[in-house]
Length: 126
Image 1 (spheres, rainbow, N blue to C red):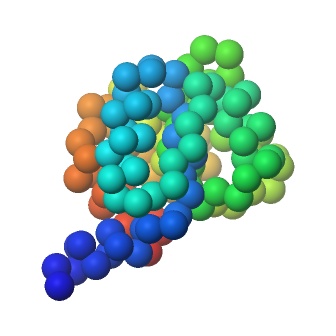
Image 2: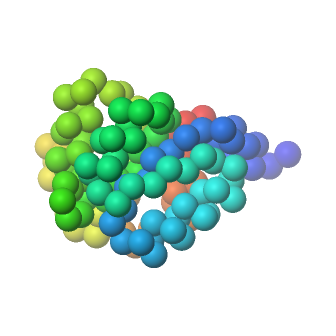
């Protein structure tokens, strides 16, 4: 069996929260991740994400840096204050402050492709 495929199989039954304000990007990534049998929850902004995190155990968070209401940086700071320790992948089309990157497991620069996401998920969840 292909080692990459074997590792992708280990992602089944993981729960990922995807926080992205752009509906198109959110839906496309959700569909792609669901094709790997990963449970995907979505939120439009940091406030929604915090409510979800309080109610459901997640294995990993993928969050956009720039969003209206509560952006990714504010949300990550709140998550850390609450004591959660799951891996966090921060996505951004702009530069990331080094202080912020210390609070995340990985930074994923936009535009990214599905193979990049798969590699990060295998690295952080397998």
